Every structure is written in C-alpha cells, then in structure tokens.
Image (cartoon, rainbow, N blue to C red):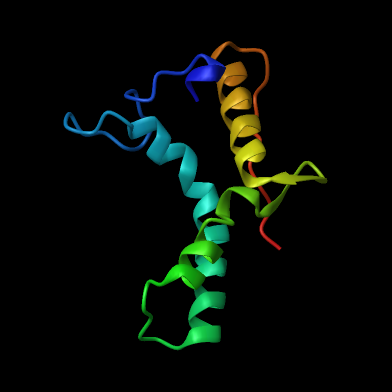
Length: 105
C-alpha cells in the first residue's frame, strides 16, 4: 500500500482515530471472501471444533499465495492486493476511473 504511494491511515469507508490502518482495512474487504472460502474448507475437512495446530496454521499461511483473478489474469493474492492498491493510487491521481478488484469464482 505504502509502495503505491498511499497513506494507510486515511481510509475511505473505515475511519477510526485509534486505527493506523483504515485504508488497509478498506483494501482488504474485496479479498475477505477468498479467506472465508479457505476457512470454510478447513472447517469442512476438520470439523467445527478446531485445534489451532500446525496443520491448520500451515493451511492459513497459504492465504498470500491463493490464486486470485483480476482482469482475466491470475496471480497470487499478495500480488493482486498490490495491483488493487496501485489502481487505487491511479484513481486518486485521475489517471484511471476504476479500481482493479479480484473476481471470486
């Protein structure tokens, strides 16, 4: 986010004087369903009463590498987030009018 020239404290929808990452909270919202899908998969495989053991932690550590599609192009979630923040920066600069968001399939 900062790498795209954005200040994480200045949120669009999230506002809280005690939260230094309001914009980060805004940016992550379109990515929440990808995390939710993984958590549902983990629960389906392991049951509702989970022990946060090595196996589950290992699965959760896959989140940044989950395949995400933006503009018909697949990339790891961590790369897609950077594309979203770069497009938001370009929107603020008036260079483009649409933020690049992932497509959930």
